[in-house]
Length: 356
Ligand SMILES: Nc1ncnc2c1ncn2[C@@H]1O[C@H](COP(=O)(O)OP(=O)(O)OP(=O)(O)O)[C@@H](O)[C@H]1O
Ligand SMILES: [Mg+2]
Image (cartoon, rainbow, N blue to C red; front, top):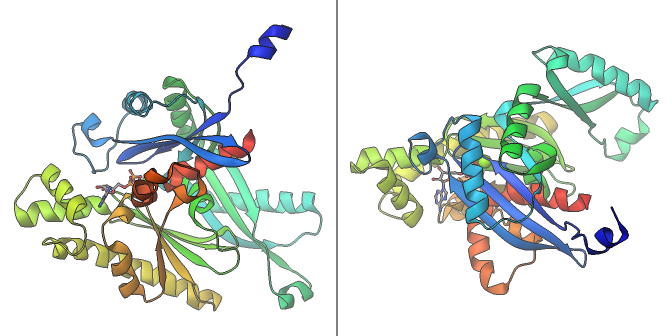
């Protein structure tokens, strides 16, 4: 590069978070300005129609179809950034929290973890990317004790999944410096509680992911096989309307409308399973979960916050990830409303922004 090139070369300062969900793609573009994350653009695209299905329904598209839809979204949302961070679906990853022997020496600890991790990963180790985190022990009693064991969160993703994501990213003209399991992106975007355990409910199209976050670490994770697409289906059946009509009704009315029964049917199923997870955690760890955060497209449902509060009788918040970004004041009401759907994409973009 000549002196002039480097003088005039435009330094890339905008970054992109790309969330490839089962029912829709989400992107968020941020720029750093004076230490703040500035929202430049965002967008969402339903995948259903690309696979001959309906908006709001989960899909199973080929990498080529996902690439095409991502290109469309980048164009529609007027995305200019090409450096990105990309989500890995929870369903395509493996997370387990295990108790392992403690070693004072970091290198020895690494050996112990990597040796033990094999037992929890059902495929040959050379087929996965392995990562792990030591869960910090807290409380004076814990520190005083001569520590014999350590809690370790083991994370693995299959190489095939990463290759698939890579082909989509490259095909759409982007580069990715990291791939992150969606849970971690969500935590960065919407969980700020540093000490007390918080439960996150990511209500997607076909499934709802439940996780308990403690000290910023995933202490428990679980998938419930019900999501917002089931509401659309319930409305379509009970009212005898098309799926696309039912989808529109669901979004317009939310809870409290004439189709309330159909919504409650699905949410009560999701919440009762989430409650079981919550109680199981509280009993096993002898502590209470302080609050619940609702995310995912299902979290956008009108009046869901109030309904959830009644069901759980603890503090419930609807996620507002865009609060971590700077945007014109007139956009705030819209960003607040759609926020839950973009939690993963915002979390990815925030991490990417930290890299530059
Ligand atoms: N305003 C709204 N009211 C109610 N439901 C909504 C609203 N907006 C989106 N949804 C529903 O949210 C679901 C999509 O959520 P989301 O985008 O989080 O899923 P996804 O990321 O594609 O799925 P997953 O994370 O499970 O792979 C769809 O079923 C959609 O109908
Ligand atoms: Mg999702």
